Length: 450
Image 1 (cartoon, one colour):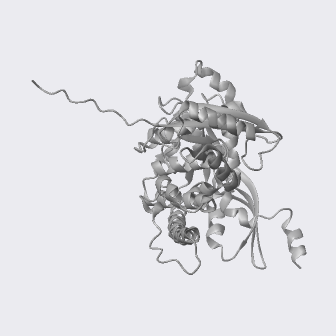
Image 2: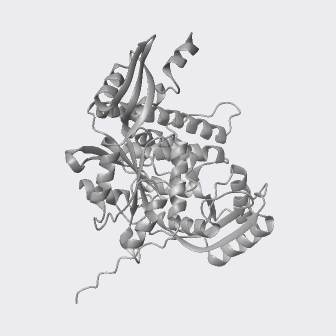
């Protein structure tokens, strides 16, 4: 008699309890309820099972435990009742808050915050060496001020470096009077310095690659948007890119660039970038600086918005805030209102179009509206001209030639130290001339310099 093969069973997921706080006078893009809903999605993406949540409204965070002492006791009881193994706060906790909460709730239950959760997701989804280095750096910079005597929890949490995050790289013996905590911190600082040097090499390589692309005169378009807005799906559809796309938060971290054919025989390079989210950790923005430069130096931003999401406008604003932080707010934007196939009445999307800059309603999954979207992109890259006045140093011969070749020159004056040029240039080239822009009449400028 044949034996029956036992069915494969997944190991049980860790049980997570969520905590959200609404602070008086603090402006937030999402309501407390919506923010906790998003936190639950993040927890699910990280492989956790949410078993409950607790909320509190405060004028300001409690000095020791972030939430009030009464709420801490309530939280402890709920954690015991639900058998939760992890408690996750929806805001970033200070090292003191985290330490005091850990003591109050007990050592058998881990206390994390939103930042640690996002770092864990990034660690799971980073697959290239660059992505792993960036995540590892962000993890170390987050955990360094939170070390408490031993950091075995860091070895368990940090996965961005393929296991490197728990390695000290050979610490050696302790010096006289030096505690293990000091040794650990010194080892982490050494690793942070090494990671920054490695990422600086990657940044320099990217800059050389971008300079090469600029010389080819093919404009670049950076796809930006809230996580899970459909950027990778859109790139796959318009460029047959084969980029991994999934209906989950932060499915892809590493930038992918593909050539796309635009109407009229024009071309552009489209780059898929990491998705944004409200309360995006500062450590991640800093660690992903080399990658985010792909956005800051693009000729055009294609902002993909999940129009079917109930908080679509809030997500749009969260992305705009992040673009401001990385100094990309000056770049022209076209908005793709994606996922109209999920709307009860797809035609209603046309009414929303007016609320967003240069917007086109599309469905990346079904291909609806993509021809119109590419036409708007082509017009913005090649047919939309912006008035500009610049004084270019003679050493900037490439920019002077670019103005003549791609722009509409109205006035040229050669003077001391440079060439004054006035006219109109394609919006996609505006960023390259920002450093040299002047305001007012050139004659007035010359008089000021005398």
